[in-house]
Image 1 (tube, rainbow over the protein chains, first blue to last red):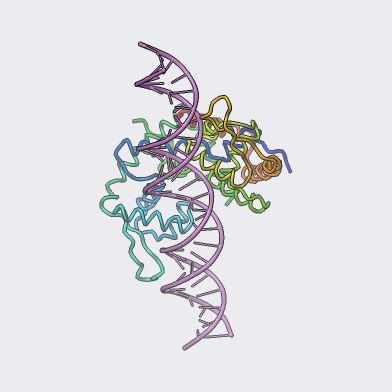
Image 2 (tube, rainbow over the protein chains, first blue to last red):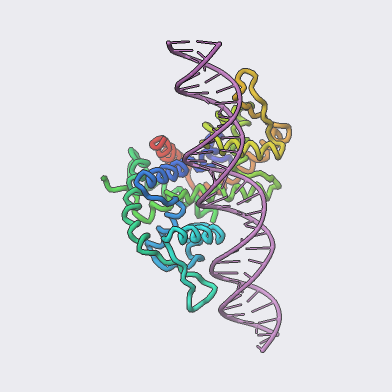
Length: 146
Length: 146
DNA sequence: TTTGGATAGTTGCATAACTAACTATATGCC
DNA sequence: GGCATATAGTTAGTTATGCAACTATCCAAA
């Protein structure tokens, strides 16, 4: 086994996603402060629907990197909040297509503004090239484990 | 508001900690394959006790970046598994000191080996200098939000 | 046509997270 | 001493995750 490039104390923060946890927590807090009453997990589902409405739950699984039960329950909760609606596919009755409601359509700009602000807070003082480097490493890590 | 340095599609993966989630999941899987029946959250608590045994729950909160209820329940579950033991402090009866058991002391090397392997998998093909850069960015992000 | 395998989604169970409200103990100031 | 305040830890409620087992539907090959 090759020596791992992380020293022992650094291994921990990488393993436990210290930075991304902090970002997620701050985003949640900023949503709340802006009067937006959704969780970041719910937001992440809406995020994909804003890009393309009417995705199936299966497609939401893939795009949000969650398993099927997680999506089932997130969509359950989003439906309770009247932010999405399940519509059975006519072509294949196994499939539920998930559609945005008017309420969630209007949420898009508001939440994206908060997310951008949060990201600016998080990345304050980090150069664009360092961000690019970091993104590339994280992508590589993800691909390595896929 | 300044333009944020992430393009829209990239914002998402950063916000949701795609890479660190993948690492955590893989580590959990590798623990299981090695016959180690603990969660990575439990492991992260033991990790701090291996560095210094007999920490209070409050100190575990700080070091593992969790709130008090989370630590209460993690210690509950670790105690059920006979991996730690709560000992009330004699100096201050509000405080529980958390001590490793023999069983968890022997777990240390085994789990650290699996963690190192997992990290090597994750970082395969990433240069040492890129890792340094990435670590620095993540640390900066964490500090920005602290 | 039927049967067996694959796919989409749901449900149950255990663990873990955050918030808020709570108990118990310690400490400092009058 | 006694009261206010701070600190350590627990409990309750909601949301989310992972795994395993389940139902329903589709499809293809015998």
